[in-house]
Image 1: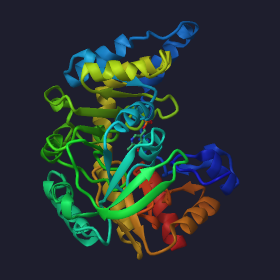
Image 2 (image 1 turned 120 degrees about the vertical axis):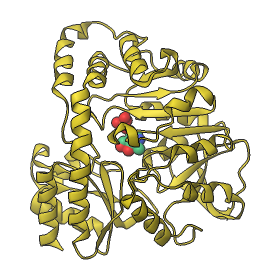
Image 3 (image 1 turned 45 degrees about the vertical axis):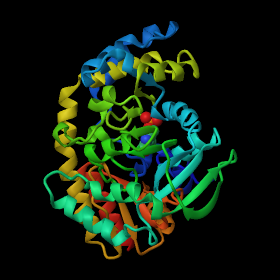
Image 4 (image 1 turned 90 degrees about the vertical axis):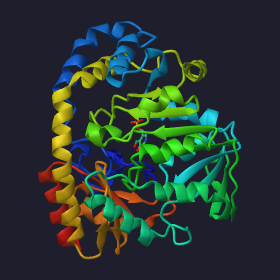
Length: 401
Ligand SMILES: Cc1ncc(COP(=O)(O)O)c(C=O)c1O
């Protein structure tokens, strides 16, 4: 079996570790360790008898729940079979623009969704020796952010990357259908015909772009897609979501996931928020029943579970601090400050080797970063888990390193 491109591949990991998949302690997929909530499991149970019927093709109950949750009319919301399904629809539209700008390292599935439609990609490195914003500067600014009350990446970084694009040396990539990247380095000049695809918080670095920074992008790009898959891990007063701006910007598309925060990646559930005309177009491109009956009920219950949400916001800051500090104390490891439920860690040691030894000796799975060409074997990513699980990882690392 080849190396997985995504985290959470327990079948692959268990074959290496020589144990059943259920015995693996998974730090590789950034999924909340607190869920699924009981409310969600109960809702799923209650719908088993309805499996003999087709799901409501309008997904009305879930759209109404999402409409209350986000204070938006239902027509602006379309559920999907995980945000990954919706990303495929977005990829089809992005391919209509001259180029799509990606901030790299970028989530690997963006390349899949764009290459499927032969989209042209312009890569702007967030971490690069050649970039104007050097790695050292980036880490320094991230450290400043960590110490600040509101951990928002200042507008400077993205503005520097976007507004000074004329003089920036970037990699211009043309994706072909085999998913390989044909790259040439050259000076890029963005036009009004370009689009932007960015996740906020950013995976895998864990940075947060401020709402103001992203709003400035809305004037520069013909289409801006913000993937907010991890936004709900921030408490409401720290979130920098653009959902409240969507009715003011017809060129804005927001992707959201319910699989990470509510711990239901096996069920598949996400949604897209955008202008109703755009959603009608996306709908015409896909299957009539992408979201199943169980997922629809789970989504309604999850959005209503304010106790689970509050528990998550209480758990994450302490557990993340514990993991961050524990990793920082291991010589040769340097975690990057993160607002999300995962940490990107720079390592002096081969991360692939570390991954294998953790699996074979401790049945612990971490995410290597080989699928991010800019990071390669120098970085790994770990999810923040319960304090007990985090301690298991730290103890194992302290023995191995
Ligand atoms: C940034 C980002 N967006 C989207 C997704 C896909 O999430 P979903 O489970 O909703 O398809 C992932 C999954 O890892 C992700 O990391």
